[in-house]
Image (cartoon, rainbow, N blue to C red; front, top):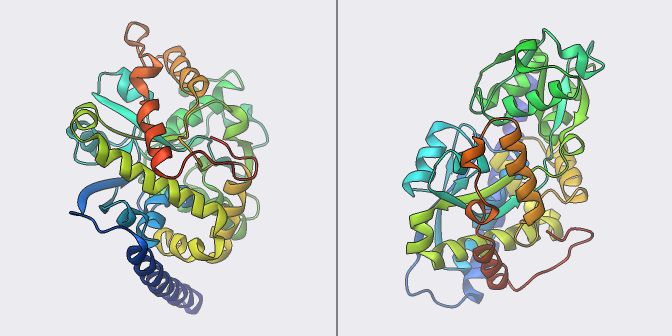
Length: 350
């Protein structure tokens, strides 16, 4: 109980520190920014509640004043999985920009990707101690958090099973809230789950026998992980709003790479995770270029993801969308220009 209380106290201090830091930086940014005729309101969705480290770009954009710089009044909305029903409804109705997949578009949703937040997957497929190969997953309990059948964890579990010649019927998929991924694995309620780096760190800390079976980016290097999208009607109606919202988040992603000391407290407050776990995730995700620094789009990556969805029957072959239908490359590039033009940070170029 003492450790738990200390942890909560530490997180509270982190949240306070993040707020104080954000207030100072946002004030400085606002003083430097041109006067806005009006602040434009927009809802920005994040895929998990609470968010993982990789999803915290909107929080950084808000705390460091990048949204305000572009005359954006952003309200951040948390969803229970990027492909959850509520997220899909928000995307289709144009009430928020959210993570949008080629699968949703191929199935008829009138939305379009407008920016690649994180092209590469940061997760490891973590498994119980006795599991050594993908073939050992036969008969085991696999996570289906974040959308159940058809959701991200279900799809990744399917891919890992396929690598051993197994199908989804060879394992048992267990649906649960996204927040239950790590506790479920530690408690032995599930045997395998895709975990983000900060949760990989905590899993090993709490139960050393847990280990990564495969890094998902190694299994599917060309898979488009996370792209923000908006209703097609919204893109046509208020392109400038969406462009500037994305520009603010591009600047936030660049700050994540360049200004670790400023962003770590903000990420800690948003994720409710301890510093050592957040810093571990930051190191992994910056080294592997998980966050985009420009548009986050590559036509080859988009095409591969579409082809993979058709091959897996996630999208009917006769409904296969074009890459132009899936991703609005031009709008994303306009946002890059608004953010100051293309940059390279280390080896990161997307």
